[in-house]
Length: 321
Image (cartoon, rainbow, N blue to C red; front, side, top):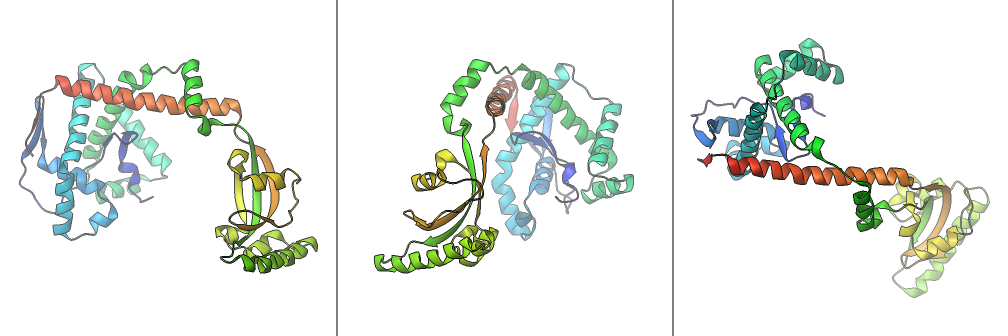
């Protein structure tokens, strides 16, 4: 996390966001790029926003390359700014406001979260090209939009138990409950020629005998295994039973925790596995809560889009890009 990450003020998700504006390195001739009801958005506002949001690779470009990237992004960023302005205007109409005390409390919370002293906070503002007054204004706007979204969208969302049931049925694979196995494996690739399979089996038997004599499975996996799990001692983590090949399930059905298997073939190659743990996927209550949260987020995004669409339909918007 870069030192000034806390200065990015996201309202929610990625649909709309408010960011502090950096001062551009050059003084630019300003002009109006959009009119939103009785308010204007200027060219400098738009480009300050894009400058701050630019990825590091864009920041490192020369001015000509960066200008081209910004030019290609103008339209989308302008739409984001228009959406923000519309929400601020509507919030004022319905009486949403933020006091100086609330802003001070929010800043104190930011300092505490990032363990920042007053001097460190001031330095971060300077690095972003912001005065305390400018930052407070942007923080105020973010808090107003957040309250507006909560009142007009989030607090109106209702998810019924019937909807949760239907959502879980429609997304069955994501909400299954069942056995999970944590296993390690030593894997030898399937040879290209059938005749070479005998040598692979002999190698597997040598490894198996070392295990029988007390050899450490993890160390032997690091030494012999021919897949990406080699680096972690063959650890494959937890795998849901329903996602396992039949050959694995047949072998695991005869094993207890701590056992290792005899070598067995699959279409991929030869395996020796060790059963580390047996667990349950999240309980049904947790699965339902996960489904409820996903459904609530889905409804939230749909409702938010509808609210912004409604604001746009009632507004006078004039683009001058």
